[in-house]
Length: 108
Ligand SMILES: [Zn+2]
Picture 1 (spheres, rainbow, N blue to C red):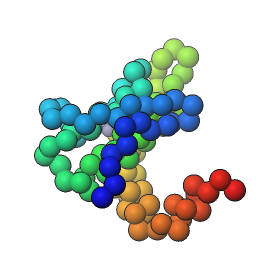
Picture 2 (cartoon, rainbow, N blue to C red):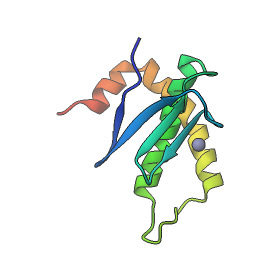
Picture 3 (cartoon, rainbow, N blue to C red):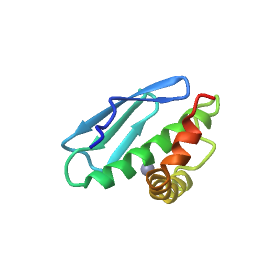
Picture 4 (cartoon, helix red, strand yellow):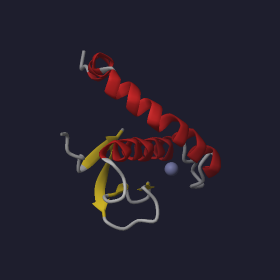
């Protein structure tokens, strides 16, 4: 069983990943503090994987789409809909296609 990583690199930014016992949502991303928080209890291991990828997508959008004035280009409701639609499917595609993961993550 793979362990939840303690850090995730989102381009040049390193995010700390924390598991907590209490949170109002399944996961949360704080781009200002480069931190992803995942709820430890109340969700299965497979749900935690989807939640982690969901939060990674928020971090990617947060790191790439922030304007100089600090506002996201994408309204939050649209970002949430996009991330929620993509995360379970991407998690499944990555899980079901290890050859694709190996190809995408190869150094050369
Ligand atoms: Zn979200």
